[in-house]
Length: 105
Image (cartoon, rainbow, N blue to C red; front, side, top):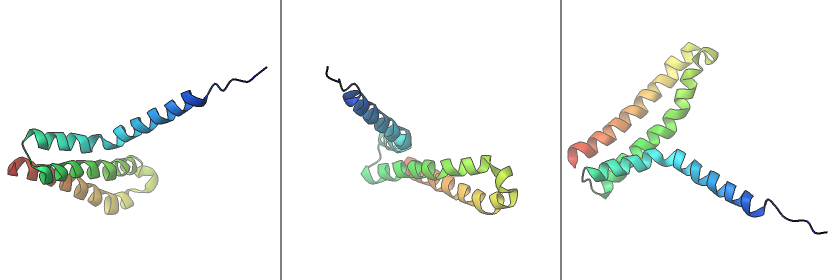
C-alpha cells in the first residue's frame, strides 16, 4: 500500500494565494495613488509621489489608528502627546502629496 501526498500542490497554492492577497491588502493605496495621478495626466515623478504619499500614510496610519483605539489602555496623555501629532503629520503629508499632483498636472 502506498501513501498519497495529498497536501503538496494544494498547500503551495494556498501559500501563493495568501501572499498575493497580502500584497494587495498592503499595496492598494500605492496602486490607487498611481492610478489617480495617471488619470489626471501626471508624469512619472508626480505619479510616484502621489502613490508613495498614499502608501506611506496607510502603512504608518494603520498602526496609529489601532493605538488610538486602545487609548484607554495606553493612557490618554501618551496618545495626545505622541500619537496624535504623528497622525496629523502623516495624513497632512499624504494630502500635500496628492494636492501637488492635482494642482501641477
